[in-house]
Amino acid sequence: MTGMRIVHPCFLRLGYGFCMCLLIGSVSAREWRQLDAGDFIIYSDASNAKIEDLALDYSAYILTLRTLILEKQDLPHVTLVLFDRPKDMAHYAEAADNKWSRKIPIGTVYQVDRQPLVALADVRKKEELFQALTGFQTGPLIALTGFSPPPWLHQAVGSILASMERTNQGVQLGVDRRGYREELQQPSSNSWERFFTGKCDLYFGVFSNSSNPEQARAWALGQLLLLNSKGQSVERFKDLAGHLTHEVMTESAMGKILDPHGETLDMQIAQFAQRNPAARTIPFDPNDFRQSWSFQPVEPWKLKLVYAEMLIAGKRADEARVLLDEVKAQNPNRPDLMVAEAHYELAMGNIQAAIALYDALASAYPGNIAFGLMSALLDIDPQGTRLNSRFFLNNESYVETRNPTNTVRKLRSVIKIDPGFKLAYVLLGRIFQSLPVIDESMIGELGPGIANTYYGSGTRFYRAKLLDRMGRHDEANEDYRVLSASSNAYHFGQKSRLHLANAKVSSDARTLNELLNSNRDVEATALINQALTDPITKIHTAQYQRFLTVIEERQAWREISRLMTNQQWSEVPAKADAFCKTYPRSNLRRGVEKMGESAQRMLNDSH
Image (cartoon, rainbow, N blue to C red; front, side):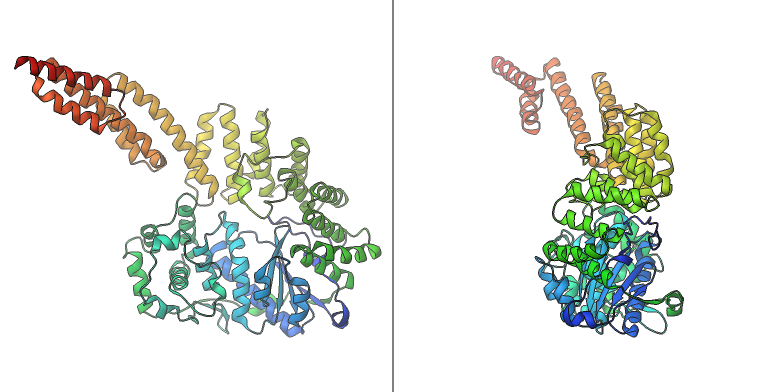
Protein backbone atom coordinates (compact mmCIF):
# COMPACT_ATOMS: atom_id res chain seq x y z
CA MET A 1 0.00 0.00 0.00
CA THR A 2 1.33 3.41 -0.89
CA GLY A 3 2.53 5.27 2.18
CA MET A 4 2.65 2.22 4.45
CA ARG A 5 6.11 1.35 5.75
CA ILE A 6 7.50 -2.07 6.49
CA VAL A 7 8.42 -1.79 10.12
CA HIS A 8 10.89 -3.70 12.18
CA PRO A 9 12.23 -1.71 15.09
CA CYS A 10 11.44 -3.47 18.34
CA PHE A 11 8.91 -0.81 19.33
CA LEU A 12 6.53 -1.30 16.41
CA ARG A 13 6.82 1.69 14.17
CA LEU A 14 3.13 1.83 13.41
CA GLY A 15 3.40 4.82 11.17
CA TYR A 16 2.66 7.76 13.31
CA GLY A 17 3.38 9.47 10.04
CA PHE A 18 -0.32 8.92 9.51
CA CYS A 19 -1.52 9.82 13.04
CA MET A 20 -2.53 13.47 13.47
CA CYS A 21 -5.60 15.46 14.44
CA LEU A 22 -8.28 18.05 13.74
CA LEU A 23 -7.84 21.63 14.74
CA ILE A 24 -11.16 22.99 15.93
CA GLY A 25 -12.43 26.54 15.76
CA SER A 26 -9.61 29.08 15.50
CA VAL A 27 -7.08 26.27 15.38
CA SER A 28 -8.51 24.90 12.12
CA ALA A 29 -7.48 28.04 10.26
CA ARG A 30 -3.82 27.52 11.07
CA GLU A 31 -1.61 25.75 8.55
CA TRP A 32 -0.09 22.49 9.76
CA ARG A 33 3.05 20.98 8.25
CA GLN A 34 4.99 17.81 8.86
CA LEU A 35 8.73 17.15 8.88
CA ASP A 36 9.76 13.48 8.61
CA ALA A 37 13.25 13.08 10.05
CA GLY A 38 13.49 9.30 9.85
CA ASP A 39 13.69 8.39 13.54
CA PHE A 40 10.89 10.82 14.34
CA ILE A 41 8.24 12.96 12.71
CA ILE A 42 7.10 16.45 13.69
CA TYR A 43 3.62 17.88 13.11
CA SER A 44 3.26 21.59 13.78
CA ASP A 45 1.45 24.82 13.07
CA ALA A 46 4.57 26.81 14.03
CA SER A 47 6.95 28.43 11.56
CA ASN A 48 9.34 26.32 9.50
CA ALA A 49 12.24 27.79 11.48
CA LYS A 50 10.74 26.65 14.81
CA ILE A 51 9.99 23.19 13.43
CA GLU A 52 13.52 22.79 12.11
CA ASP A 53 14.97 24.05 15.39
CA LEU A 54 13.02 21.39 17.30
CA ALA A 55 14.14 18.75 14.78
CA LEU A 56 17.79 19.66 15.35
CA ASP A 57 17.35 19.66 19.13
CA TYR A 58 15.71 16.26 19.09
CA SER A 59 18.33 14.87 16.71
CA ALA A 60 21.00 16.13 19.11
CA TYR A 61 19.17 14.49 22.03
CA ILE A 62 19.05 11.09 20.29
CA LEU A 63 22.68 11.38 19.11
CA THR A 64 23.76 12.17 22.68
CA LEU A 65 21.82 9.27 24.17
CA ARG A 66 23.30 6.89 21.60
CA THR A 67 26.81 8.17 22.21
CA LEU A 68 26.59 7.93 25.99
CA ILE A 69 24.51 4.78 26.49
CA LEU A 70 22.51 3.18 23.71
CA GLU A 71 25.02 2.70 20.88
CA LYS A 72 23.15 1.05 18.00
CA GLN A 73 20.05 -0.02 19.90
CA ASP A 74 16.82 0.22 17.92
CA LEU A 75 14.79 3.21 19.05
CA PRO A 76 11.04 3.70 18.92
CA HIS A 77 9.72 5.98 16.22
CA VAL A 78 8.63 9.17 17.98
CA THR A 79 5.86 11.58 17.05
CA LEU A 80 6.46 15.19 18.15
CA VAL A 81 3.44 17.50 18.03
CA LEU A 82 4.60 21.10 18.24
CA PHE A 83 1.88 23.65 18.98
CA ASP A 84 2.65 27.26 18.28
CA ARG A 85 0.21 28.28 21.02
CA PRO A 86 0.25 26.53 24.44
CA LYS A 87 -3.52 26.89 24.86
CA ASP A 88 -4.07 24.73 21.75
CA MET A 89 -1.90 21.98 23.20
CA ALA A 90 -3.64 22.13 26.56
CA HIS A 91 -6.98 21.48 24.87
CA TYR A 92 -5.92 18.02 23.71
CA ALA A 93 -2.81 16.99 25.61
CA GLU A 94 -3.97 17.33 29.20
CA ALA A 95 -4.37 13.84 30.59
CA ALA A 96 -7.50 13.07 32.56
CA ASP A 97 -5.64 11.80 35.62
CA ASN A 98 -2.07 13.05 35.22
CA LYS A 99 -1.18 16.04 37.35
CA TRP A 100 2.15 16.43 35.56
CA SER A 101 0.43 17.16 32.25
CA ARG A 102 -0.99 20.24 33.92
CA LYS A 103 2.19 21.33 35.67
CA ILE A 104 4.49 20.96 32.66
CA PRO A 105 2.95 22.79 29.71
CA ILE A 106 6.24 22.50 27.83
CA GLY A 107 5.62 18.85 26.96
CA THR A 108 3.49 15.81 27.63
CA VAL A 109 4.76 12.36 26.66
CA TYR A 110 2.53 9.33 26.18
CA GLN A 111 3.31 5.74 25.23
CA VAL A 112 1.00 4.51 22.50
CA ASP A 113 1.72 1.05 21.06
CA ARG A 114 5.05 1.26 22.91
CA GLN A 115 5.97 4.46 21.05
CA PRO A 116 6.35 7.98 22.48
CA LEU A 117 3.84 10.60 21.42
CA VAL A 118 5.18 13.97 22.59
CA ALA A 119 3.11 17.14 22.72
CA LEU A 120 5.12 20.36 22.93
CA ALA A 121 4.45 24.06 23.02
CA ASP A 122 6.64 27.16 23.32
CA VAL A 123 10.07 25.57 22.88
CA ARG A 124 11.93 28.87 23.11
CA LYS A 125 13.18 27.85 26.56
CA LYS A 126 15.55 25.07 25.55
CA GLU A 127 16.36 23.93 29.06
CA GLU A 128 12.67 23.37 29.78
CA LEU A 129 12.34 21.42 26.54
CA PHE A 130 15.16 19.05 27.45
CA GLN A 131 13.89 18.78 31.00
CA ALA A 132 10.54 17.59 29.63
CA LEU A 133 12.13 15.16 27.19
CA THR A 134 14.61 13.72 29.67
CA GLY A 135 12.10 13.57 32.50
CA PHE A 136 9.56 11.52 30.56
CA GLN A 137 11.56 9.81 27.81
CA THR A 138 14.98 9.01 29.25
CA GLY A 139 13.75 6.23 31.54
CA PRO A 140 11.91 4.30 28.78
CA LEU A 141 14.83 4.78 26.40
CA ILE A 142 17.34 3.56 29.01
CA ALA A 143 15.08 0.54 29.40
CA LEU A 144 16.04 -0.38 25.83
CA THR A 145 19.30 -1.64 27.34
CA GLY A 146 17.34 -4.31 29.14
CA PHE A 147 16.53 -3.08 32.64
CA SER A 148 14.36 -0.45 34.23
CA PRO A 149 16.42 2.37 35.71
CA PRO A 150 15.88 3.15 39.39
CA PRO A 151 14.88 6.75 40.20
CA TRP A 152 18.41 7.83 41.16
CA LEU A 153 19.83 6.59 37.83
CA HIS A 154 17.00 8.14 35.84
CA GLN A 155 17.76 11.39 37.65
CA ALA A 156 21.52 11.05 37.11
CA VAL A 157 21.25 10.53 33.36
CA GLY A 158 18.34 12.95 33.00
CA SER A 159 20.24 15.75 34.75
CA ILE A 160 23.08 15.43 32.24
CA LEU A 161 20.81 15.29 29.19
CA ALA A 162 18.79 18.24 30.51
CA SER A 163 21.99 20.31 30.42
CA MET A 164 22.30 19.88 26.63
CA GLU A 165 23.18 22.93 24.60
CA ARG A 166 23.71 23.06 20.85
CA THR A 167 26.66 25.23 19.89
CA ASN A 168 28.69 25.80 16.73
CA GLN A 169 31.13 23.18 17.99
CA GLY A 170 28.55 20.47 18.71
CA VAL A 171 26.38 19.35 21.64
CA GLN A 172 27.74 20.56 24.96
CA LEU A 173 26.87 18.63 28.12
CA GLY A 174 27.45 19.03 31.83
CA VAL A 175 26.97 22.77 32.27
CA ASP A 176 25.93 23.47 35.87
CA ARG A 177 22.95 25.83 35.71
CA ARG A 178 21.42 24.85 39.05
CA GLY A 179 24.27 25.41 41.48
CA TYR A 180 24.79 21.69 41.95
CA ARG A 181 28.52 22.08 42.56
CA GLU A 182 27.98 24.44 45.48
CA GLU A 183 25.28 22.13 46.85
CA LEU A 184 27.72 19.19 46.77
CA GLN A 185 30.04 21.02 49.11
CA GLN A 186 27.33 21.15 51.77
CA PRO A 187 26.93 18.17 54.16
CA SER A 188 24.06 15.82 53.32
CA SER A 189 21.87 14.34 56.03
CA ASN A 190 21.05 11.25 53.95
CA SER A 191 23.25 8.20 53.56
CA TRP A 192 24.17 6.67 50.22
CA GLU A 193 22.14 3.63 51.22
CA ARG A 194 19.06 5.85 51.51
CA PHE A 195 19.96 7.43 48.17
CA PHE A 196 20.41 4.17 46.25
CA THR A 197 17.38 2.41 47.72
CA GLY A 198 15.09 5.15 46.42
CA LYS A 199 14.13 6.72 49.75
CA CYS A 200 15.12 10.21 48.56
CA ASP A 201 12.80 12.45 46.56
CA LEU A 202 14.58 12.43 43.22
CA TYR A 203 12.37 11.32 40.37
CA PHE A 204 10.99 14.64 39.24
CA GLY A 205 13.88 16.71 40.50
CA VAL A 206 14.85 17.44 36.92
CA PHE A 207 11.90 19.84 36.77
CA SER A 208 12.80 21.72 39.91
CA ASN A 209 14.09 25.26 39.62
CA SER A 210 16.41 24.79 42.58
CA SER A 211 18.83 22.11 43.68
CA ASN A 212 19.02 19.97 46.77
CA PRO A 213 21.84 17.71 48.01
CA GLU A 214 20.32 14.51 46.60
CA GLN A 215 19.67 16.01 43.16
CA ALA A 216 23.22 17.34 43.24
CA ARG A 217 24.51 13.85 44.06
CA ALA A 218 22.59 12.40 41.13
CA TRP A 219 24.00 15.08 38.81
CA ALA A 220 27.55 14.41 40.02
CA LEU A 221 27.12 10.65 39.52
CA GLY A 222 25.86 11.33 36.00
CA GLN A 223 28.89 13.53 35.31
CA LEU A 224 31.34 10.95 36.63
CA LEU A 225 29.60 8.05 34.94
CA LEU A 226 28.99 9.55 31.49
CA LEU A 227 31.13 12.62 30.94
CA ASN A 228 34.45 11.95 32.69
CA SER A 229 34.81 8.42 31.39
CA LYS A 230 37.54 8.93 28.79
CA GLY A 231 35.16 7.78 26.09
CA GLN A 232 34.06 4.73 28.07
CA SER A 233 30.60 5.83 29.16
CA VAL A 234 28.90 2.92 27.38
CA GLU A 235 31.21 0.40 29.05
CA ARG A 236 30.68 1.97 32.47
CA PHE A 237 26.95 2.05 31.97
CA LYS A 238 26.93 -1.66 31.05
CA ASP A 239 29.03 -2.39 34.13
CA LEU A 240 26.51 -0.51 36.25
CA ALA A 241 23.59 -2.26 34.55
CA GLY A 242 25.19 -5.61 35.30
CA HIS A 243 25.19 -4.79 39.00
CA LEU A 244 21.67 -3.45 38.99
CA THR A 245 20.17 -6.56 37.41
CA HIS A 246 20.93 -8.73 40.43
CA GLU A 247 21.69 -6.57 43.43
CA VAL A 248 21.00 -3.20 45.01
CA MET A 249 23.71 -0.64 44.32
CA THR A 250 25.96 0.21 47.26
CA GLU A 251 28.33 3.07 47.92
CA SER A 252 31.30 0.72 47.64
CA ALA A 253 30.13 -0.83 44.35
CA MET A 254 29.47 2.56 42.75
CA GLY A 255 32.87 3.81 43.88
CA LYS A 256 34.57 0.89 42.16
CA ILE A 257 32.57 1.36 38.96
CA LEU A 258 33.55 5.02 38.75
CA ASP A 259 37.19 4.37 39.64
CA PRO A 260 38.28 0.76 40.28
CA HIS A 261 41.57 1.84 41.86
CA GLY A 262 40.55 5.18 43.32
CA GLU A 263 39.04 6.75 46.40
CA THR A 264 35.72 6.06 48.08
CA LEU A 265 32.57 7.42 46.46
CA ASP A 266 32.36 10.31 48.92
CA MET A 267 35.98 11.23 48.18
CA GLN A 268 35.37 11.13 44.42
CA ILE A 269 32.30 13.36 44.77
CA ALA A 270 34.20 15.79 47.01
CA GLN A 271 37.10 16.00 44.56
CA PHE A 272 34.68 16.50 41.68
CA ALA A 273 32.94 19.37 43.50
CA GLN A 274 36.24 21.15 44.12
CA ARG A 275 37.55 21.07 40.56
CA ASN A 276 36.00 22.52 37.43
CA PRO A 277 36.09 19.84 34.74
CA ALA A 278 35.30 20.95 31.24
CA ALA A 279 31.88 19.92 29.92
CA ARG A 280 31.97 17.23 27.26
CA THR A 281 31.21 18.20 23.67
CA ILE A 282 29.79 15.67 21.21
CA PRO A 283 30.37 16.53 17.52
CA PHE A 284 27.14 17.52 15.81
CA ASP A 285 26.84 18.93 12.28
CA PRO A 286 23.29 20.19 11.53
CA ASN A 287 23.86 19.79 7.79
CA ASP A 288 24.23 16.03 8.22
CA PHE A 289 20.62 15.97 9.37
CA ARG A 290 19.05 18.78 7.32
CA GLN A 291 19.89 17.36 3.91
CA SER A 292 17.20 14.66 4.03
CA TRP A 293 14.44 16.81 5.50
CA SER A 294 11.46 18.26 3.64
CA PHE A 295 8.28 20.00 4.74
CA GLN A 296 4.90 18.67 3.63
CA PRO A 297 1.36 19.89 4.34
CA VAL A 298 -0.72 17.80 6.72
CA GLU A 299 -4.11 16.61 5.52
CA PRO A 300 -7.03 17.46 7.87
CA TRP A 301 -8.00 13.81 8.48
CA LYS A 302 -4.47 13.09 9.72
CA LEU A 303 -4.79 15.93 12.20
CA LYS A 304 -8.01 14.43 13.48
CA LEU A 305 -6.30 11.09 14.01
CA VAL A 306 -3.36 12.50 15.93
CA TYR A 307 -5.63 14.43 18.25
CA ALA A 308 -7.63 11.26 18.76
CA GLU A 309 -4.40 9.44 19.65
CA MET A 310 -3.53 12.14 22.18
CA LEU A 311 -6.97 11.99 23.74
CA ILE A 312 -6.81 8.19 23.96
CA ALA A 313 -3.37 8.35 25.57
CA GLY A 314 -4.71 10.92 28.03
CA LYS A 315 -7.57 8.56 28.97
CA ARG A 316 -10.16 10.71 27.26
CA ALA A 317 -11.38 7.98 24.90
CA ASP A 318 -14.96 9.24 24.70
CA GLU A 319 -13.76 12.54 23.21
CA ALA A 320 -11.45 10.62 20.86
CA ARG A 321 -14.40 8.56 19.62
CA VAL A 322 -15.99 11.69 18.13
CA LEU A 323 -12.91 12.42 16.01
CA LEU A 324 -12.53 8.79 14.96
CA ASP A 325 -16.13 8.72 13.76
CA GLU A 326 -15.55 11.88 11.68
CA VAL A 327 -12.54 10.28 9.98
CA LYS A 328 -14.46 7.03 9.51
CA ALA A 329 -17.28 8.83 7.73
CA GLN A 330 -14.85 10.12 5.09
CA ASN A 331 -12.12 7.44 5.02
CA PRO A 332 -13.66 4.23 6.41
CA ASN A 333 -11.01 1.79 5.16
CA ARG A 334 -7.77 3.59 5.94
CA PRO A 335 -5.23 1.41 7.80
CA ASP A 336 -4.13 4.30 9.99
CA LEU A 337 -7.75 4.72 11.13
CA MET A 338 -7.89 1.00 11.97
CA VAL A 339 -4.72 1.38 14.06
CA ALA A 340 -6.27 4.29 15.96
CA GLU A 341 -9.45 2.23 16.39
CA ALA A 342 -7.34 -0.58 17.88
CA HIS A 343 -5.82 1.90 20.33
CA TYR A 344 -9.33 3.04 21.24
CA GLU A 345 -10.49 -0.54 21.85
CA LEU A 346 -7.44 -1.16 24.04
CA ALA A 347 -8.23 1.96 26.05
CA MET A 348 -11.81 0.72 26.50
CA GLY A 349 -10.59 -2.71 27.62
CA ASN A 350 -11.93 -4.48 24.51
CA ILE A 351 -8.83 -6.63 23.94
CA GLN A 352 -10.41 -9.12 21.55
CA ALA A 353 -11.76 -6.29 19.41
CA ALA A 354 -8.26 -4.79 19.25
CA ILE A 355 -6.80 -8.18 18.28
CA ALA A 356 -9.39 -8.53 15.52
CA LEU A 357 -8.39 -5.14 14.10
CA TYR A 358 -4.68 -6.00 14.17
CA ASP A 359 -5.42 -9.37 12.53
CA ALA A 360 -7.37 -7.64 9.78
CA LEU A 361 -4.50 -5.21 9.23
CA ALA A 362 -1.99 -8.06 9.13
CA SER A 363 -4.06 -9.80 6.45
CA ALA A 364 -4.55 -6.65 4.40
CA TYR A 365 -0.89 -5.54 4.62
CA PRO A 366 1.22 -8.71 4.92
CA GLY A 367 4.47 -6.81 4.43
CA ASN A 368 4.05 -4.83 7.67
CA ILE A 369 5.17 -6.88 10.68
CA ALA A 370 3.85 -4.44 13.29
CA PHE A 371 0.25 -5.59 12.99
CA GLY A 372 0.92 -9.29 13.44
CA LEU A 373 3.34 -8.57 16.24
CA MET A 374 0.86 -6.41 18.18
CA SER A 375 -1.78 -9.11 17.79
CA ALA A 376 0.65 -11.72 19.14
CA LEU A 377 1.64 -9.48 22.04
CA LEU A 378 -2.00 -9.08 23.00
CA ASP A 379 -2.44 -12.86 22.79
CA ILE A 380 0.38 -13.27 25.31
CA ASP A 381 -0.85 -10.45 27.53
CA PRO A 382 -4.65 -10.42 27.10
CA GLN A 383 -5.16 -7.57 29.55
CA GLY A 384 -2.78 -5.33 27.61
CA THR A 385 -1.27 -4.26 30.92
CA ARG A 386 2.39 -4.95 30.20
CA LEU A 387 2.84 -3.96 26.58
CA ASN A 388 4.96 -0.98 27.58
CA SER A 389 7.25 -3.09 29.76
CA ARG A 390 10.09 -5.39 28.83
CA PHE A 391 9.76 -7.20 32.14
CA PHE A 392 7.14 -9.62 30.85
CA LEU A 393 9.62 -10.93 28.26
CA ASN A 394 11.76 -12.59 30.91
CA ASN A 395 8.91 -13.70 33.18
CA GLU A 396 8.43 -17.15 31.67
CA SER A 397 5.37 -17.91 33.80
CA TYR A 398 3.50 -14.92 32.37
CA VAL A 399 1.95 -16.61 29.32
CA GLU A 400 -1.82 -16.53 29.19
CA THR A 401 -2.49 -17.01 25.48
CA ARG A 402 -5.61 -19.14 25.07
CA ASN A 403 -4.59 -20.32 21.61
CA PRO A 404 -0.80 -20.78 21.56
CA THR A 405 -0.94 -22.45 18.13
CA ASN A 406 -2.49 -19.31 16.66
CA THR A 407 0.00 -17.05 18.44
CA VAL A 408 2.91 -19.14 17.19
CA ARG A 409 1.49 -18.81 13.66
CA LYS A 410 1.46 -15.02 13.96
CA LEU A 411 5.05 -14.90 15.21
CA ARG A 412 6.21 -17.23 12.45
CA SER A 413 4.58 -14.89 9.93
CA VAL A 414 6.50 -11.97 11.41
CA ILE A 415 9.76 -13.91 11.18
CA LYS A 416 9.01 -14.90 7.58
CA ILE A 417 8.69 -11.21 6.67
CA ASP A 418 11.84 -10.25 8.59
CA PRO A 419 14.04 -13.22 9.61
CA GLY A 420 16.26 -10.86 11.61
CA PHE A 421 13.50 -9.51 13.87
CA LYS A 422 14.78 -10.68 17.26
CA LEU A 423 11.77 -9.75 19.40
CA ALA A 424 9.63 -12.31 17.55
CA TYR A 425 12.09 -15.09 18.42
CA VAL A 426 12.16 -14.34 22.13
CA LEU A 427 8.35 -14.30 22.22
CA LEU A 428 8.31 -17.58 20.31
CA GLY A 429 10.73 -19.09 22.83
CA ARG A 430 8.52 -17.94 25.70
CA ILE A 431 5.52 -19.71 24.25
CA PHE A 432 7.46 -22.86 23.31
CA GLN A 433 8.78 -23.40 26.83
CA SER A 434 5.29 -23.01 28.30
CA LEU A 435 3.73 -25.73 26.13
CA PRO A 436 2.97 -29.13 27.67
CA VAL A 437 4.61 -30.93 24.71
CA ILE A 438 7.85 -29.81 23.06
CA ASP A 439 10.00 -31.27 20.30
CA GLU A 440 13.44 -31.03 18.74
CA SER A 441 12.33 -28.75 15.90
CA MET A 442 11.76 -25.88 18.36
CA ILE A 443 15.47 -25.81 19.24
CA GLY A 444 16.42 -25.26 15.60
CA GLU A 445 13.65 -22.73 15.05
CA LEU A 446 15.01 -20.47 17.79
CA GLY A 447 18.60 -20.66 16.56
CA PRO A 448 18.51 -17.67 14.13
CA GLY A 449 17.21 -15.45 16.95
CA ILE A 450 20.21 -15.98 19.23
CA ALA A 451 22.71 -13.14 19.43
CA ASN A 452 24.67 -11.15 21.99
CA THR A 453 21.87 -8.60 22.34
CA TYR A 454 19.03 -8.26 24.83
CA TYR A 455 16.44 -10.00 22.66
CA GLY A 456 19.01 -12.48 21.36
CA SER A 457 19.89 -13.32 24.97
CA GLY A 458 16.22 -13.87 25.73
CA THR A 459 15.97 -16.36 22.88
CA ARG A 460 19.06 -18.21 24.15
CA PHE A 461 17.52 -18.30 27.63
CA TYR A 462 14.33 -19.93 26.40
CA ARG A 463 16.31 -22.37 24.27
CA ALA A 464 18.17 -23.37 27.43
CA LYS A 465 14.85 -23.92 29.18
CA LEU A 466 13.74 -26.21 26.34
CA LEU A 467 17.02 -28.11 26.43
CA ASP A 468 16.61 -28.63 30.17
CA ARG A 469 13.12 -30.04 29.66
CA MET A 470 14.53 -32.44 27.06
CA GLY A 471 17.11 -33.68 29.56
CA ARG A 472 20.01 -32.14 27.63
CA HIS A 473 21.37 -30.46 30.74
CA ASP A 474 24.97 -30.00 29.60
CA GLU A 475 23.86 -28.07 26.49
CA ALA A 476 21.41 -26.05 28.56
CA ASN A 477 24.08 -25.16 31.12
CA GLU A 478 26.40 -24.01 28.35
CA ASP A 479 23.72 -21.51 27.24
CA TYR A 480 23.21 -20.43 30.85
CA ARG A 481 26.97 -19.91 31.26
CA VAL A 482 27.12 -17.73 28.14
CA LEU A 483 24.23 -15.63 29.43
CA SER A 484 25.65 -15.31 32.94
CA ALA A 485 28.82 -13.74 31.49
CA SER A 486 27.11 -11.49 28.91
CA SER A 487 26.86 -7.74 29.41
CA ASN A 488 23.78 -7.67 27.15
CA ALA A 489 21.74 -10.38 28.88
CA TYR A 490 20.58 -8.31 31.88
CA HIS A 491 17.51 -10.06 33.41
CA PHE A 492 18.21 -13.22 31.44
CA GLY A 493 21.76 -13.23 32.77
CA GLN A 494 20.46 -12.91 36.31
CA LYS A 495 18.08 -15.82 35.81
CA SER A 496 20.87 -17.87 34.23
CA ARG A 497 23.20 -17.23 37.15
CA LEU A 498 20.41 -18.30 39.49
CA HIS A 499 19.83 -21.48 37.50
CA LEU A 500 23.53 -22.35 37.48
CA ALA A 501 23.77 -21.61 41.18
CA ASN A 502 20.77 -23.82 41.96
CA ALA A 503 22.16 -26.64 39.83
CA LYS A 504 25.59 -26.29 41.45
CA VAL A 505 24.29 -26.24 45.01
CA SER A 506 22.09 -29.28 44.32
CA SER A 507 25.06 -31.20 42.92
CA ASP A 508 27.32 -30.07 45.77
CA ALA A 509 24.68 -31.05 48.33
CA ARG A 510 24.65 -34.62 47.01
CA THR A 511 28.46 -34.75 47.06
CA LEU A 512 28.66 -33.28 50.56
CA ASN A 513 26.15 -35.75 51.93
CA GLU A 514 28.22 -38.61 50.48
CA LEU A 515 31.42 -37.17 51.99
CA LEU A 516 29.84 -36.64 55.39
CA ASN A 517 28.37 -40.13 55.41
CA SER A 518 31.89 -41.41 54.77
CA ASN A 519 33.34 -39.21 57.53
CA ARG A 520 35.47 -37.34 54.96
CA ASP A 521 35.08 -33.97 56.67
CA VAL A 522 38.33 -32.52 55.33
CA GLU A 523 37.26 -33.01 51.70
CA ALA A 524 33.77 -31.66 52.48
CA THR A 525 35.24 -28.54 54.11
CA ALA A 526 37.49 -27.93 51.10
CA LEU A 527 34.53 -28.20 48.71
CA ILE A 528 32.51 -25.76 50.82
CA ASN A 529 35.33 -23.21 51.05
CA GLN A 530 35.79 -23.32 47.28
CA ALA A 531 32.05 -22.82 46.71
CA LEU A 532 31.98 -19.83 49.06
CA THR A 533 34.50 -18.03 46.82
CA ASP A 534 32.65 -18.86 43.59
CA PRO A 535 30.58 -15.89 42.30
CA ILE A 536 27.97 -18.27 40.86
CA THR A 537 27.23 -19.92 44.22
CA LYS A 538 27.53 -16.73 46.23
CA ILE A 539 23.76 -16.39 46.50
CA HIS A 540 23.60 -19.76 48.28
CA THR A 541 26.17 -18.91 50.94
CA ALA A 542 23.70 -19.71 53.73
CA GLN A 543 23.22 -23.27 52.47
CA TYR A 544 26.96 -23.93 52.37
CA GLN A 545 27.31 -22.37 55.80
CA ARG A 546 24.75 -24.87 57.09
CA PHE A 547 26.95 -27.71 55.86
CA LEU A 548 29.91 -26.14 57.67
CA THR A 549 27.80 -26.00 60.81
CA VAL A 550 26.96 -29.69 60.44
CA ILE A 551 30.66 -30.51 60.13
CA GLU A 552 31.45 -28.44 63.22
CA GLU A 553 28.64 -30.17 65.14
CA ARG A 554 29.91 -33.61 64.13
CA GLN A 555 33.45 -32.73 65.12
CA ALA A 556 32.29 -31.40 68.50
CA TRP A 557 30.13 -34.53 68.98
CA ARG A 558 33.09 -36.79 68.14
CA GLU A 559 35.28 -34.95 70.65
CA ILE A 560 32.70 -35.42 73.42
CA SER A 561 32.33 -39.10 72.44
CA ARG A 562 36.11 -39.53 72.59
CA LEU A 563 36.19 -38.04 76.08
CA MET A 564 33.44 -40.42 77.17
CA THR A 565 35.29 -43.40 75.68
CA ASN A 566 38.48 -42.36 77.48
CA GLN A 567 36.48 -41.88 80.71
CA GLN A 568 37.54 -38.23 80.97
CA TRP A 569 34.28 -37.48 82.78
CA SER A 570 35.34 -34.11 84.21
CA GLU A 571 35.59 -32.43 80.77
CA VAL A 572 32.36 -33.76 79.30
CA PRO A 573 29.61 -31.77 81.15
CA ALA A 574 31.07 -28.36 80.23
CA LYS A 575 31.61 -29.34 76.60
CA ALA A 576 28.14 -30.84 76.38
CA ASP A 577 26.62 -27.63 77.81
CA ALA A 578 28.62 -25.52 75.33
CA PHE A 579 27.47 -27.73 72.44
CA CYS A 580 23.80 -27.32 73.36
CA LYS A 581 24.14 -23.53 73.60
CA THR A 582 26.07 -23.27 70.31
CA TYR A 583 23.91 -25.69 68.31
CA PRO A 584 20.46 -25.52 69.97
CA ARG A 585 18.67 -27.06 66.98
CA SER A 586 21.18 -29.80 66.23
CA ASN A 587 19.92 -33.32 65.59
CA LEU A 588 22.78 -34.46 67.80
CA ARG A 589 21.72 -32.35 70.77
CA ARG A 590 19.75 -35.05 72.62
CA GLY A 591 22.63 -37.50 72.37
CA VAL A 592 25.09 -34.89 73.63
CA GLU A 593 22.78 -34.07 76.57
CA LYS A 594 22.67 -37.74 77.52
CA MET A 595 26.47 -37.97 77.41
CA GLY A 596 26.71 -34.88 79.63
CA GLU A 597 24.20 -36.34 82.10
CA SER A 598 25.98 -39.71 82.11
CA ALA A 599 29.37 -38.10 82.71
CA GLN A 600 27.92 -36.03 85.58
CA ARG A 601 26.54 -39.20 87.24
CA MET A 602 29.91 -40.89 86.93
CA LEU A 603 31.53 -37.88 88.59
CA ASN A 604 28.95 -37.86 91.37
CA ASP A 605 29.38 -41.61 91.97
CA SER A 606 33.17 -41.28 92.13
CA HIS A 607 32.77 -38.86 95.05
